[in-house]
Image 1 (cartoon, rainbow, N blue to C red):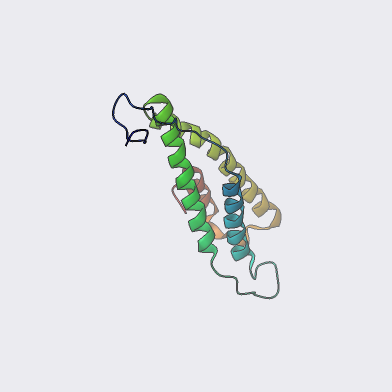
Image 2: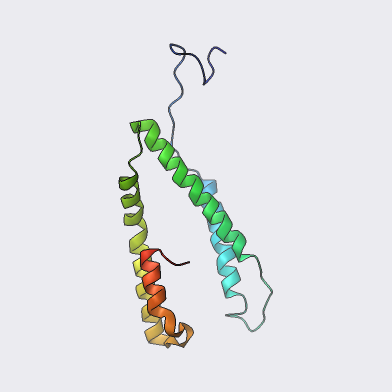
Amino acid sequence: MNGSRGSAPGGPAEEPFTLRYRPELDGLRALAAALVVAYHLDGLLYSHDWGITGGWIGVDVFFVLSGYLITTLLLHERATSGTIALRRFTVRRLGRLVPAVALLVVGVGLAALAFGSEALGDNYWTGAIGSLTYTTN
């Protein structure tokens, strides 16, 4: 099989792994988020319960996309450097995710102060700590 990816040593070199932007994945991610938001808003903001079900589909799609993108990043790192620095990868991900989660927790806390904490119940601090430490769903 001359010229194939699995060619013998001395044969043609494999194509380098390329990492490129995929706008269609952003569209899928937006659709997944919209499904989850629609599920949570159904009956909350409107006087009629429209019976929207299936918010879990959005969560599943989002997790599949996340797994694909994380795997792609790890494969790219291995292809370019020959190894995967898992600690550095994790620190980069946390540096990107933690500020957004912290902003969300502060925003929910401020909303609870402004509008009353009855909607949050007695579990705000438990949820806040769980969210900040990624130990809750």
